Length: 215
Image 1 (cartoon, rainbow, N blue to C red):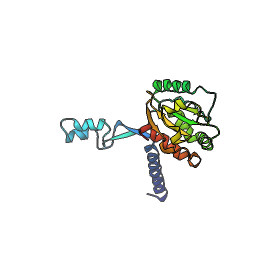
Image 2: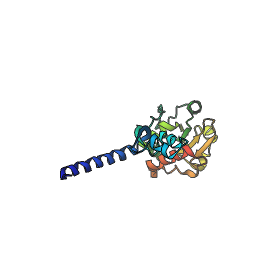
Image 3: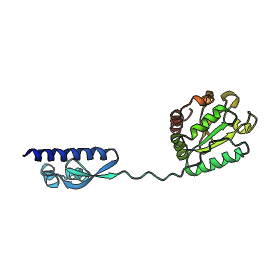
Image 4: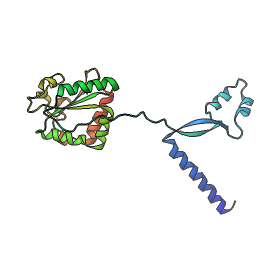
């Protein structure tokens, strides 16, 4: 083999290896029924009389080549609104009821955010909601309702169904299931110092809450 021929062979082998690596992370591999030389039904029958080897090859066994196929697409998710402020004029009980109705329809939990515009940490949390990653987690997985509590003198009855604002401070987050049951909440005033909270930490908590309860 000439030097040029050897280089060409190595280039083809490298290209094949890179293509296989690229496909491995984003595709599935299915058997095609095309046997490698020296394998397939004829070869398998010589070593098995019951046809079991044939079945293995048809199922994509080692005697058959595979073809890369893309993963099936993820189901379409309609993003939910992500409010980033506290409206003192909003009908909070009605907003919570509407969110719970939507949760029953699509299975996504409701996230309640209790706070008020005068609160610096509430403003900090609102700013984090505008982060691309946090916003995406919320819009695809939650129904968010922001509840204005004023100076702890507004919507206190609503808040009292789920937590003690006097103990946890604001902002305070509560996750509800579609049935209205509390799944998770930021106990211990963990969000009362939201100005020190990173977007990654908030997004991580919201993702964890989707799979756990009692947080």
